[in-house]
Structure formats: C-alpha cells, structure tokens
Length: 194
Image (cartoon, rainbow, N blue to C red):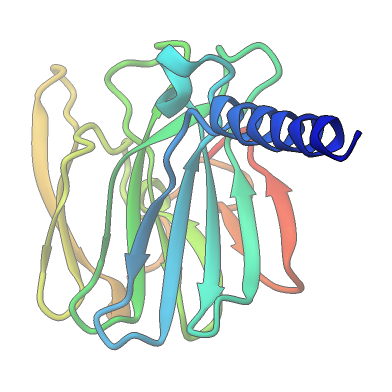
C-alpha cells in the first residue's frame, strides 16, 4: 500500500513538472541596469510556441525585484499586438530603450521605439519627438543617453536622427496627447497603440 502511494505521488510530481515545462515554452529576457539599481524583464507572450516572441510583456522592476509596473503588448487575436525587437539600458542607467514591431505585420515600415525613465518612472515613445515615425528598430545608444535611429522620409527612405534623452525637445506628435504611461503601484497596463 505504501509503495502504491509513493509511486502515485512520484507520478503526480513528474507530471506536474512536465506540465510546467510544457507551459513555459517561452524564455524571459532580463536586462540589469549597469549600476545594478533596476532591471527589466521581457516576457514573450505570443499565443503559440512558434510565435511566442511576436508579442511581449515588459516588467519594470527595482533592484530588489519588486515590480514597478508592467506593459502588456499582447492582443486577443495575436495579430494586433507588438513584440520587442531590441532592448538596451543607456550607459548612465537612467533610461531603458526598446523597439517594437507589429505582431500582425501591420505598418512594416514602422518600429515604435519607447523608453522608460528611472527618475520619473514614465514610459514615452520617441515617435512623439519627430515629425514622422521611427522606421528602424535597430537603434544604437551613445553614452551617456543618446539614441541614434532613423525616421521615415518622404520618399520612404530612412532618415538618420538622434536624440539625447536627458535633454528632450518639445514633442512634435500628431496625436492629440503624446504617449505617456506612469509606471507605479505594480500595475499591469495593456498597451494597444504605442
């Protein structure tokens, strides 16, 4: 009798581990600030294993791993969300910059690029500082916090631009309100239009 109970418990334990492993087909990516004072975790949340990176959830955390907030870029149909293409901390540890692409392939020329400010814990988008949208997801960072990227030109060509994050100009957004998400209280915020 004791042997049967032991075998049953062992089988349940193995089955539980297999189920957890099967569910965790995605791997999260962690980015520790250079000064160690904050971290960002990017979790692929696409609906199928083959497309798990197509949509993302981004968690902004303190050094002790407490969640400041999370941004969820997933969509119910896996066709209208966004996935992270590139993500980096600036060398001064004050900004986390990340670029996105549409999970459904909508507007393939557009690569919304956003940044998180540690000082005020606000996420903003670089598109709001230029007359046209960011077109290159493969930005470069220069010390201490300058982003080099490109915007869409009038003839479809990439036009190089750069912006210093600690000396932002006025927004030039065509939106009625520039994109701005206050990151606090551990909230998970669904983002549908970065």
